Image (cartoon, rainbow, N blue to C red; front, side):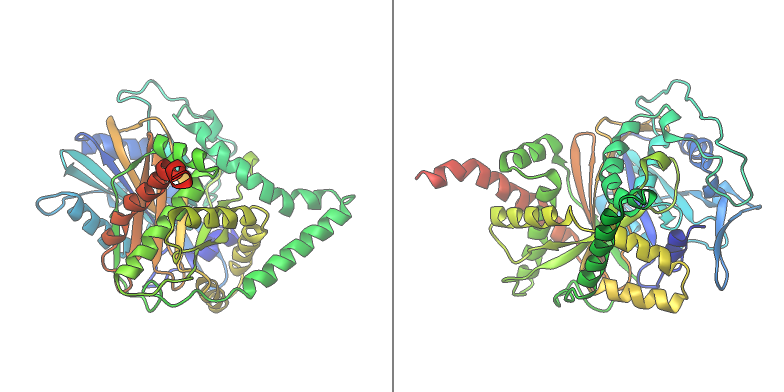
Length: 468
């Protein structure tokens, strides 16, 4: 097991389990037997998913589960009546705060036969197995572009499957016949620039001056992160409990989001993160908190996966601390402030720094890791992810997927998780919170569309406001 994966394995706390949680909603009923068969045939192509994570006093490793039983990992569940979104959100909340069986490979699908006329599935998997980009890749291998797929191409193993190796016999993404296989290229390309600073320069001794500047940049970033002020106290920050609460919104049309972003000269990510900041600020003001001039930070994952090693699982990402100006009420002023923060981070060494820190922590005593994670978690109020998913509808086990939602875990004492995922021409916003901090996340997600529409209105009325 890599040092970074080992760090994630040891990061669990009763108040924050390191579980990636995903929800798949089908527009029609799916047969459980076919769903189980798809998981057996495709998910288990990845050898790591048959392995337990083993931790001794110093090292962590992957150990094949000699008693692997798929029935422990793909199970049927039923929602209480009336079996709608409220009941599904409650069930997801319960699962997000419930640990997996550590004697087995730490992943499980809960399959719900009947949900609003269709079916649904909930995946929980420990973060030590893979990061979000890798799990998108895994998800793509499960799906097809039509209900009855043609024969799938399987890649030849890249080498012998060693006991506990976990990845050596896994298929290469580029050689699998799956829809959307190219969507990861953007993420890989974005990460390549940061990765080059950390790796490529060291391969060229003649670039000594560049390496020196690189080292100074990392050292400066380390000093800057270490001296960041703690995030301000709000109802979002404070002691955590063991209960999670999840909620999600109706989706926004991606074409509309793109048009607004283009008209304002910003990225889709700028626009969506600004919208999320508006929703969080509005929620605090609704509860009587003064947000004037207030900024909080979100820890945002940045992919650092080497494009040449795109087929591997594991964790290859760093973090940046994005400032969210929740105290700015004007939607355009808030958007341009977020855009400026995003632009500044594009030249930051924070992703490389935090990935290196995680690798170092993986070899250190757990007590040292806990102190480091506590320190980092004081610098942020939320973890926020924005992932570009497949833009064509996909089918899994013969059922068309109508909606996808997911959350990555929050570490240390962070109790707020923001998830933004685009799929099939829609943008889905989700929130998972600690119940002691935000018992009603639906009150936040309900503001998301409202804040987006404020931006749209500002764009439409802009010419009239400038020329009364």
